[in-house]
Each structure stands twice: as structure tokens, then as C-alpha cells.
Image 1 (cartoon, rainbow, N blue to C red):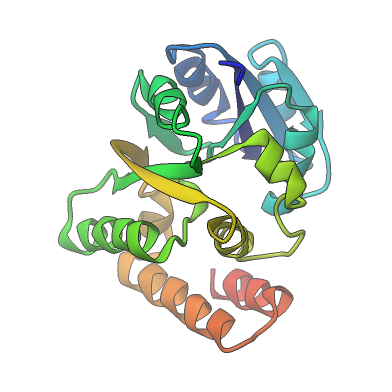
Image 2 (cartoon, rainbow, N blue to C red):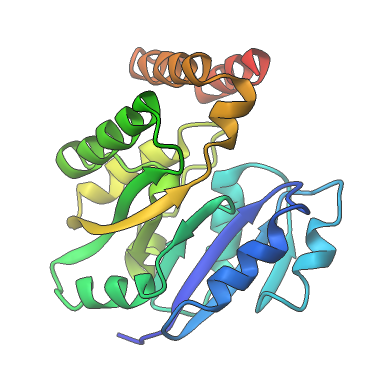
Length: 228
């Protein structure tokens, strides 16, 4: 297995944060290529990313679709999907490589920590980590990594409007062992602050329940957008 990790970051209208995001990722230890997949930003995200990332491409919006496009551009044997508002520790990529020395492990995630120490958001972090560890349902803000060969064999992320991370993690859990690393991945609390902590928590759980009840991702996306 090559020691190159392809860090794939889907973005949309992130001009205020993209430079800092790329600076942080570029400082991570280990061999890596940074791939930005822009979903048709109306601001300067694409322009700012050029020259800071190894590869920058543009496609239609849709996180699952964007990540699949990035995976096709990747040359690493390990794919690491990172949200643009998430931060990881300096040796995080080395930890991924170390975990995947075990041939039984095909992928995994980090331990989520929302960068707000309020009780509701500490609860979100705790329950998210329990879900990933015991149910093997990993959301994108936990930093998904997977062997490239496994990803492509399974056809990548489903090209759906919402819940693509849930569907993908359930799919990969069936073919190999997933691991949750003890290192934290820190995600911004901005969406909770912007739309209201309890309102956002309620909306997230409502969508999960409706998904389990069989409501289509297209309809769920409409509910999500209308609520915000």
C-alpha cells in the first residue's frame, strides 16, 4: 500500500474559510495530495483554492457527487474525506496510515468534537461517537477514510441529495472492519449557532427518523432546506 493519502474536500461558497482550511491541511504530517471539489460556488472559493490545493475541480453541487468526483481524481491508495469546516490534529494522517497497516481494517473515522463546550453540543459529540463505534454509521463531520480499492469496488458514495454518508457507511461496514480513532476531529459549531442549537438538533434527528421510515433523500433535502 502506498503511503500517499488523498484528502478530498467538497466545498460550496467557502471563500471566507477556504484559505485557512487549506493552510491547515497542508501542514499535516505525511504524504498527501489535497483535492478541492467545488460544487459551483458563486463566490471566489474556486479561485482562492487554485495554487493552494494540488488539484481543484468544479462540478454540480451535491456532497456525495462531489466526493465521487474527487475520488476519481485521486491517486492515493487511501481516500480521506474532510469537511471544509473541520480541523484535525497534526499527526492525523499518520494515524490513518498506522490503522490501515492492519489488513482487516478497510476504513474508519475520528472521534467527533464540536468546538462548543455547551452541554447540548457535548451530547451531540458523545452520541455521534457512540453511533459510529457501535452502529458503524459514520457521518461526514467525523472524517471518513477508506481504502481507495474498496471505495471504487463499492461504487463510491450514492449520488443522492442527503444522507449519502449514512448510506455509504452502512455499505462499507458490510465488507470489512471499520475503526474509530481516538484522536479528535473538531467541527465548527457555526450551523448550530446560526440556526439555533435546539432547532438544529431537532431537525437533524427528525431527518434521521424520516430516513429510517423510508422517506426519499430528495424529500428529506427539501425538508432540510425549508427548515433553514
